[in-house]
Image (cartoon, rainbow, N blue to C red; front, side, top):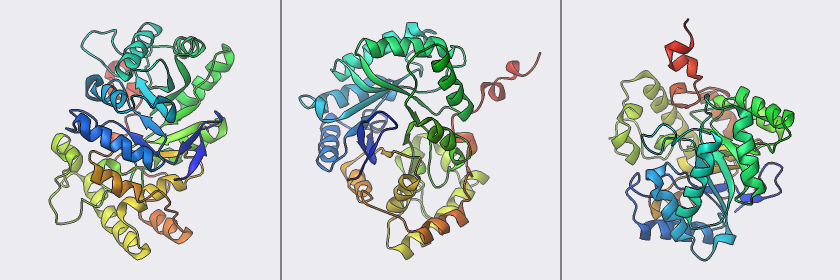
Length: 339
């Protein structure tokens, strides 16, 4: 396993990190399965586990907490807040009121007294940067979080938050967690240049593009991945963006074969090759998935392979931009762009 410094924190993290979104009812995983995945990941050198309060309604955090019992100090533990945790209007967002409560809930579910990285899961347009950063700074000073970061923030929001921290003399976000894969390269245009400029660590989610780059999806075959069962629109090949992904996958499969790599090795090697990326978050649902992903631990792609990837999906290109989850609110809500 290789390790890199997480931004300017001084914390050393593995280039492959364990994402826990599939733990619990989302991935239909039992506690025994989760514990076996965590055990194997730690044995193979992974030292960062990332979860969120919203994953299976808190079940993921509970499972991670039980799997880590007695060895909390061995890992860098990360979780997130801001996504809705119920129908009540205040159980979401990044206000001080909710973040204080959400963190206490996460600590209880995880069975720990602090987390190493607390992330704002999505930008909350209803809350000022000063309000959020002030709350996070106080939680940090209280010893309940060591560092905090953002997730899926547009570049301009990352910049604005950095300036707000400076203006109000508050602690700042030290990481960003964006979607990044061979098929979703849009962050190369704005986000990664900004994170590099401000020295943020970058933990890329969905490096296998929701399974498109797992090797299980090929032309002429049935698409029967776990994600396709509850996100059918993302895999309907009559939709132009999905057709474009399938065409790219077929070309990428040839590149992988010629390089003697699996599709997973190609995909993960691509993400970790970028100098602005600290690590890739893998989200195995089974031990078999984990072993296939761990095979990419020491994968280094040659310049020829990277050039071949660029020829298939040009730098800065998103083949499914609508799935990035960072669309400005005014594009989604007509009332925000009309008088």
